[in-house]
Image (cartoon, rainbow, N blue to C red):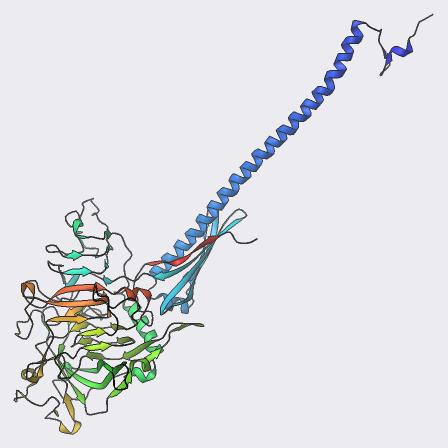
Length: 594
């Protein structure tokens, strides 16, 4: 008979003798197993958490990397937009014509971008452009949205050289005693052998930054600027983009747009009919005189316009060149300098400057108003008043654009408040003049507008006289500049010649005519036998024009930047800089909403 103790049976059909070693061992194993299971479960949970944390960190790193790549891609699109703008002869014209390069895409290994260049708005009269670029990397997008403006520099030049022949130029120096309180930019001459593109004698005072299109060192590593670096008080910058003043296409495009936006009443095509000189020495011109009218009890800026004048020109000196574009004839030619002019016996046009005001438009955007006069021919700025100081005075905003030359025969100043420390027009003074010529802008030779030149035997004749060989047409001799003592018709310029204007020369250089002349009418009272030519404003010229010869005759330069011009106070887009920079507070980058 087999004994069976059912009370000691355990699950699974196995039996255990009470208090036996076998039973005790099996009981301990049953307790550890759940503990191990729980521990493994905890470790699994911890491992899963660590894996998730690691995955999250990794995803966060990937996302950060994509964010950075997307932002860099967007910035690359912005840079491409800026580069495209800098390559355009006329950015407004390109945008108006929907140029294909105004938008595009760029692919990268880690992403891509798409960019768009648009016109944004006007700040006053200054165009503002907008570049929008969206960068993508993976599923991440970043946007760079920037408002940019064309950088306006004080004095820009295609080359720091003066023409000396049809295809030749020579260096022109900055000299001792000259004050250049104006930023300067000089395009890369790309000469061979490679020499410094700015020419200096002595220690002229460069008071503001100087930009050079060329690098500092030659291709062989020689430092071209080591000996003059100490002269640049506000620094010198190299490898800067060239300005577009040397582009005939850029100048023509801007002139055309200005012409088309000018009131038809102030678009002139003069036809001079005075029988003076020969056909080769006659030019058609408009005479402009600016003054203040107080007859109404208030000060009103006025412009007196004499159309259909005939200018008699004389052979220029060695340095009197303008630029030409005809093939096979070189790039410079001698031009006839101003000697004197005749006006017809016709009613003068006299208007408040505000009557010439127009606004520029781009689509639905409109600029602040400003005065515009367009002349398909030449312009003489000067008066025939007998007062000792018949300077031209500007009250209002005025831009004069001509297809020929602008001859300045009087000092030109702007009306209104002035900075007592600098004598420049004060900040907030709204009065300004812009002079833009497709020919040259020159101070006339002060020795060529007197009686001996025009051929009258009477030395003290009346100021206005009928031209003797053609009295029926009643053409009157128009003396300009300051009266020479008691002889009303002998005119000469002041010792210190002041021009307050933004000057743009599309067909050569700015300066004085017949500088190398020994004519006794030329002033020679300044230091080193030079007078001063004071420019308060800005200057753009294709090539340097000569203003004087050191220790000989002509003028020494005193040029000062009128900072108001940097705000776009002039009507129209007549800037030629090749650099575009963000407008104040104009940079925005962000992640677009999904």
